[in-house]
Image (cartoon, rainbow, N blue to C red; front, side, top):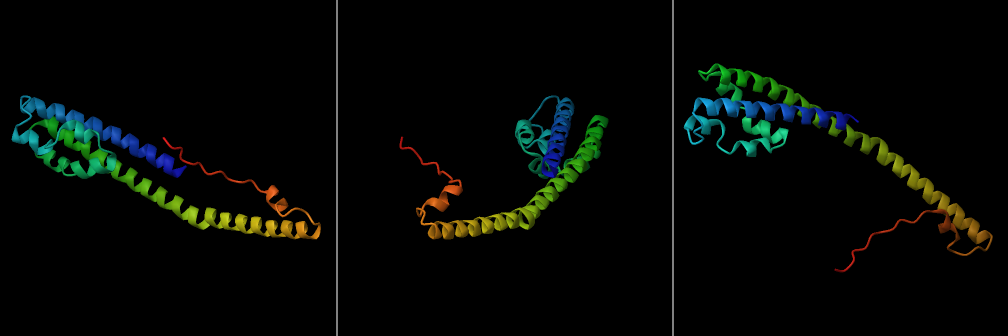
Length: 162
């Protein structure tokens, strides 16, 4: 559950960052009069905006981490405001990413400490029961496959030839 909640927070932060990057793109295009080849525009969008927006939060944060500091030094108030807004979203995004990493680690710890130990106990009990059933089959002169009837058999999917 913690992983699901953490992933939802990451997704929400990713949406907020994407929206802010879109706002910054619009403001910057207004400043450079829609000249995407302008050095000032290329400073932030060396790659197309859609390529940045397509990234997941972790990759996107890594790519735009330095933007807020640069945007705060821009002369236009809308770019400065975009930098402030982006900084807030990046801070929240970093926290969400850390929460997701913590939740994934907790799940891995739980699996190793609890679930795998439980499965080992169940498998040991299953083997012990199979041994008792085998002994009973020998004592009562039952067919050798009799103990196996009490256990569900798994099936393996086979690849069909094309």
